[in-house]
Image (cartoon, rainbow, N blue to C red; front, side, top):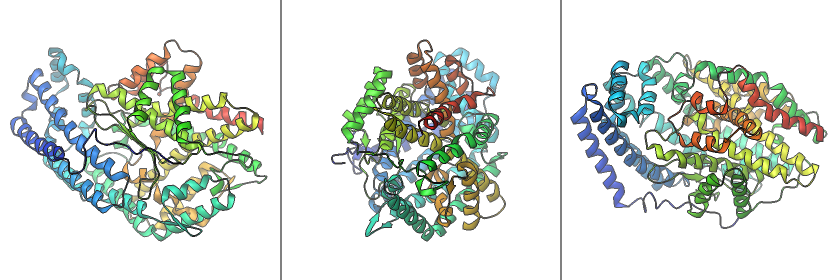
Length: 587
């Protein structure tokens, strides 16, 4: 794993001391104040062209601030324990928060324009009509918005509330050291050992994780309680009817569609996770698996290390077979050093694709350690990157995609890579191992994420009334894990602390169902592709390029799909069920 790439952030700024950072912040503050002074409380009196000009100015300021924000985060995230970088990131965040207070009036006032007047404004200006999707999505929060004064208070307090506690969580997890033999490992290194070929290594790693989390559980419990209560207070102020409502609104998805997804996955627990883990336990000649064997290789699986160059070729070839146009975008990330792949102490242990700004390009972070799963993660994040790159043409305000659709290109890219590898299997043993790996990824993306969602739902619902103890959180976690994973997984006492390291619970409550949504949606899309839907590639690229301008109904219509259909989610589960069927036949 030598010579792994580290990203080059010079397309944003040359260094934290780059004078352009301060210039952009000063310009942003001056422009924001001018905009507020000139148009505050006057938006509903503007004609169409003037409203268009105000939105353009607002977008330019937002993108300028977004560029600084992106740089500070990407500079910080590869070394979370570095105090100089942490201070830089925090100072930038506080400055941007202060500047953006002067911009709060615009979305609030746009939301209060009457539907009739907006319709008239659109008809009189093609320029303004281009921003119809942005205005539409702003107005979905109309019912829950408060006065400007209250919105400013909520916005400003975020620096010492949500953002501050999230940062404390990140720095706490990044600073953890896990004892393993005579070594002291980071989070990414120790969790990587849970997929080791050596059973004793997996067990020791699992026990070390449990012990370290237990030693830090007091602060992790406190952070979770504070953030859940903070959300509860915000929800009460805005009068959201339930804890998931704000996430569903921001995802532009109906409650009943999310509930249908969750219910369908729960109904399939036995046919998915319960059945698979029973099959896998059989490979070990056991009636059950210890929880640390859940993601282990099969007993006869010999997985050689995959080099970075090999991984690059596998992923590029897979994308190229589907679409040379998308492959050419993916290749840019390798050629231009838009990827940070080297695992290192203090670096965030996960993986992500950051869209940055339309005027620059996305950046990708992974922790590549040469495993097949790392190749699939690379394919996944590059799918995000290609999606974000295509969507940037919509501009800063309309390039972001709702979370439910944001996983489309990433999971589709994984699927392309998996199918490419499956076709090239040399024998049944190789095919069996590959199928098992893919099934586990699907279970982690669908079943496990819905279990995460149910854990969050229980925690946030109960936190509205009372603080939750470490014991409460552990019991909720264990109960839901047992229900979802089934009787073939055996848990031990330390596993009750494993909820505490998951960043999505902290940064983005209820984000997790988007993974299951995206996976099932992509399975349906992929079936359409395999069944030879006419002009699939161009329809797919057009859907990605739409960014945040299309709702899920509009996006899926060209493919003959509708997430509101009763059997949509069941169809989305048929691909992993079929993979389990194939594995069963090979057993």
